Image (cartoon, rainbow, N blue to C red; front, top):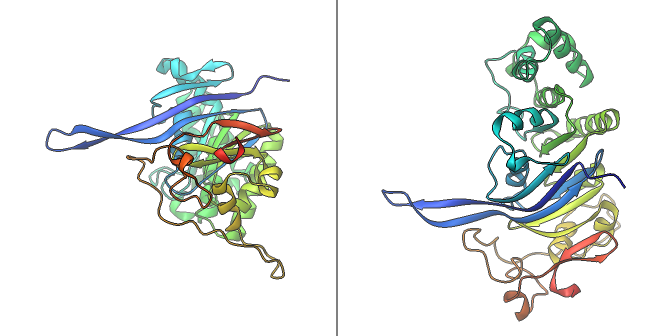
Amino acid sequence: MSEPLLRVNQLKKSFPIRRGILQRVVGQVQAVNGISFTLNKGETLGVVGESGCGKSTMGRSILRLIEPTSGSIEFDKQDILKLPKYQLQVIRRQMQIVFQDPYASLNPRFSVEEILSSPLEIHKLYTPKERSIKARQLLERVGLDPDYAGRYPHEFSGGQRQRIGIARALALNPKLMILDEPVAALDVSVQSQVLNLLIDLQAEFELAYIFIAHDLSVVRHISDRVLVLYLGKMSEMADVESLFSEPLHPYTQALMSAVPIPDPDIKRERILLQGDIPNPANPPSGCPFHTRCPQATAHCSQVVPEWKEVKQNHYVACHLYE
């Protein structure tokens, strides 16, 4: 079996809480708390969970857009947390991100050609004329007219802007792309077009994706495996069919029960979670989900559940399976 392209081990990211005139640190928000997984070349890992569970923070920490607090991240057998900035810039050519908001992620003062040429210029690739040709080729590859290269972002729709964002991520021929809710801001009809584009690009360039999303139907369509996060910690991980057909963790079961079924004759019991998500600055003891779990016991409030494989390649952190 080939070596994984990406290996994340015990990744943690905390943000200090500062108060007072002197801005003293009075606490920590554990946004990401001990996440570990591997990702193979050409594979898609879907990452799901409620808002505030640490999905985007995890994605940006992997790229060192924000510096992790601790843990290790091995990309192509290199621990990128130990690389100095000049070496990190070289490896960043192989790791790219597509942001959620296609309106905020493109510089309104740059033309599309300048946006797509900037990564090539930063890494000193090609001549100015070759960069211009490359920008037009990228536009064509993501389904846009190459003659749009002279236009500015405000002249495009949301779906077209997201295609430009994908083209920019492709410019340096990466091996890994982190897709931070890339279709959340788009209309449903446009969502399917962008998803199909991503699937085609993955097959063509053998890209590895970390696909962060809220919409479970989208995750099911594009992912090979799915990781479920709750309050910065891993709840469950399995291949996509196993997770959707037989979710084990009570939190995953609640998420799945909220997915609409297009057939009106099929009835499914909706699991309604009580209460709000706990404050990440003051998380509950034991299992982080026990304050809202319908199956929680006294043991759950005292002991952190162990992350274990309960079925083949199906992992869960829950006392129900010990």
